[in-house]
Image (cartoon, rainbow, N blue to C red; front, side, top):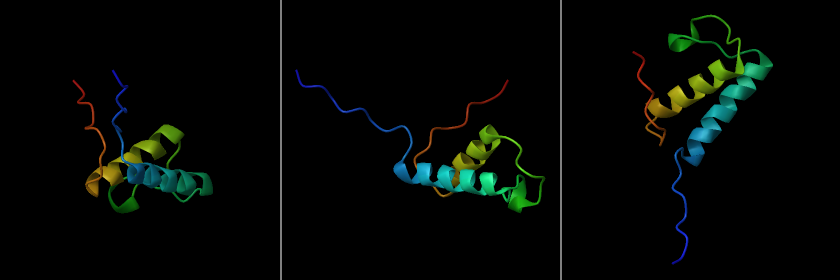
Length: 69
């Protein structure tokens, strides 16, 4: 039986979105909050979360956010 290829969890373009956000974070221009009106992004995790959130809004293939209880 041939091995089946694994399905992607995240689209390639969503990865690009995160990549762009990481660049902004490293440059020090990444900002949190609606419309970038919040404070400066302080951690890598925060930058990744913002990138994924932007990808979700654009309708790219990204898993749903885990709900907090």
